[in-house]
Image 1 (cartoon, one colour):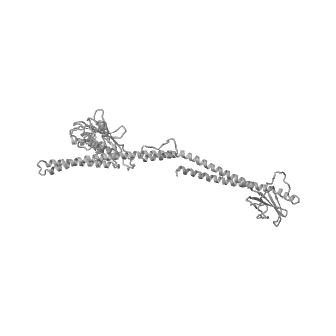
Image 2 (cartoon, helix red, strand yellow; image 1 turned 120 degrees about the horizontal axis):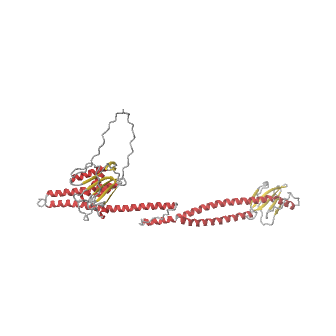
Image 3 (cartoon, rainbow, N blue to C red; image 1 turned 90 degrees about the horizontal axis):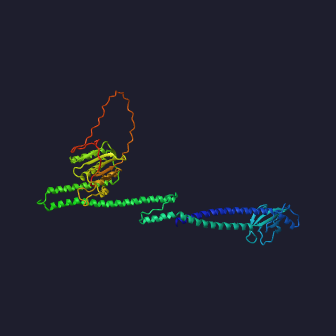
Length: 517
């Protein structure tokens, strides 16, 4: 049974109950009023019937006549005069009638009491009043035919009218509910279509309406948007996972194949007539290191994908930038590196991960820049006040394809996918940025070279510690201190490690020329 049918039946049932209560109350009130009117007529006609009964017996009138002719004896009124021994002395009936009341059970001593009795023959009912007259009792009975006819007519009107009202209510409720519940039917149809795979379908939403169905439609549309986004994210995640597994298998297979090949060459030439054992072992060690580095990068990416909260220690990005420059100079004393970190720049995060991200950016810039070109590392707030690490090179910059896929895993600019790296370095930087709630970007500098920027959220200041009053100390004479002398700016010379940020050096930051790990 549909919801609309149940609602219509419920409304009709409630309406029927209300009409029944109203009908019973109306019927009872009308019946009491009619019986009261009939009883009043019965009492008013007693004197007339008494005089008429006395005249029929040849005696004088026993009651004074009414002051006017307003009292009328109802047609069919029956009177009976009884002796003290309940013997019928005389009878009187206004107008001829074939029915008479059954007065056998009416007690003569029930004076001025009105009772209801049946007919001696037939089913007609009568209202009977016992009134004393002389030594006997006068019983006056009035037929209830008119009252019962009126009550029967009223009952018929109530039943017919109630049935018509119930029918109209059922039809009207059905039409109204059909119109009001039509949005629910559309919601059901849309849900069926979505179940069939049409995830783009949405429930008709009337934003201007404040009804419960409109709010339900808006809530369902919001839920569907979230579900569709979740399905898209899941599909994209599955696609990335398949691509990741394929690329990881490819990258791992290369060093394994090399190791197996060198081992096979040594096995086929156990006397070392054509194979140098030192060369074979060196190549096996190099490929093992390459595979170890790849596995470590994969494990780091897997840990970063767990979306766990990073360590929230205070990290000075200026110190990390200086250490990265020192590492470059230590590896190549002739490498021109320029540092711009004029003041401490603190963030909350994982020091080891941030150091790795900056090292990957700097390594990418060094490996993909021409020999002897300058690398610039900057640690400054950006225009929005966010702490930012910037690495810029002065190479050829990035093409459109590289700009679009620089941070994709296992992506490299070389279509043949050759080279020493696996294409995970910049993707690790992106994962570390996401771990800290920041972002990494890349673009080309107008004067040449690529610029990589690692934006991190500004740290939330810690609440100040409670003030503790210090014990009173006797005052001492103030000794003037020597004025502070600012240090002279200094640019690191080739071959000299950069151990700390130089507060006066300025440079435009950037990143590697071609994306690489």
